[in-house]
Image 1: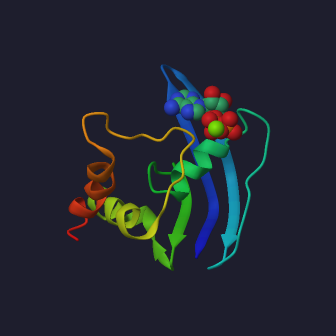
Image 2: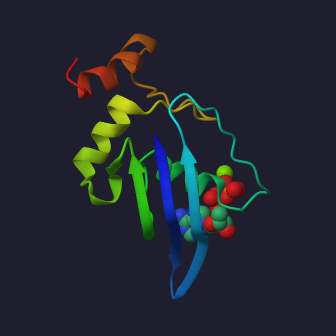
Length: 113
Ligand SMILES: Nc1ncnc2c1ncn2[C@@H]1O[C@H](COP(=O)(O)OP(=O)(O)O)[C@@H](O)[C@H]1O
Ligand SMILES: [Mg+2]
């Protein structure tokens, strides 16, 4: 279960502040398929980075399986990514110095499997 409550995200660029997400409410149930659509620069990647626990919002609350991700430290964010979230990136993000099998094994090693 994914729930956003008034999620905000701003980036700082030097002295400039760019307000990208301005109070997003979102609810995605277990097993539900959802597509996030919008023109380039509208904030899709910003939302996906927050849902995927790769980045943090600057305002509002994010609940993942009824737990407040906003209060998680980096280690617990990493645990959610390792155990509960699967990413399919446009780029494969494989490590070139590892062969295919080692690339597949690596997250399992981090996860203690
Ligand atoms: N790390 C960043 N620092 C500053 N501005 C950013 C950063 N990432 C994204 N932005 C800005 O936030 C807005 C939304 O970007 P993004 O989430 O990548 O949109 P989309 O994925 O829909 O194309 C854009 O104006 C972009 O320039
Ligand atoms: Mg994008």
